[in-house]
Image (cartoon, rainbow, N blue to C red; front, side):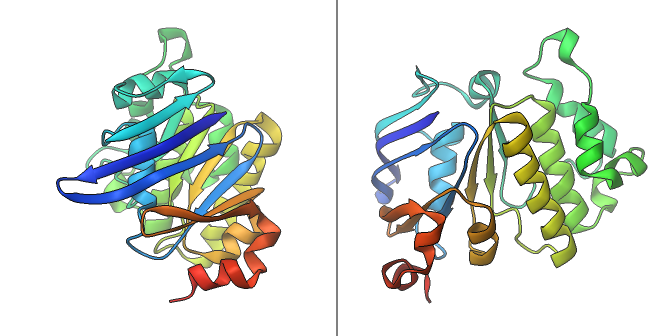
Length: 231
């Protein structure tokens, strides 16, 4: 289980997170929703070590992560798919996937077959440069790269952003498969309400750097939840 307790985060004088607490359990999809600018990506930066907390704690399977560098967290089993994908545009698809070898022992440095089962297009484009792929294909590549690290929890920042509907469905099926077949935890930040409603086991809604609603996915249709999501 990933646990965030009373986490606060600042960018200079601006406070992005205000005492947030949440958990993401193994074998479940946990979705964090909210309008633009409420601190969702800042939460993931705190989880993955991209930005230090001002106060509070992040722990995974009982190991405190505060002060641990991002590569240390990757070794602990945290796989990260950042907003905007951030693939290497001049490297081939194969080389992008192989960049996920960094936290692995030598014997584990191979691309699991499951990645090509989930995203067959990647196998057919291994020699293509990442920058030549469509946005949806790059998103699949970014998820595949994270899966190469053999994560215990997969952290995704708005994977449907700018993606065509057919590939959104493929990504949704892949996330469900990973939860059901491997038992990994999935922490998903998203604005696409229907995507979360269909996938999530547990949902949190953020507003102004705080958690303002939490509960099972069915609670997304309550007036309280909708009040925090409407623009």
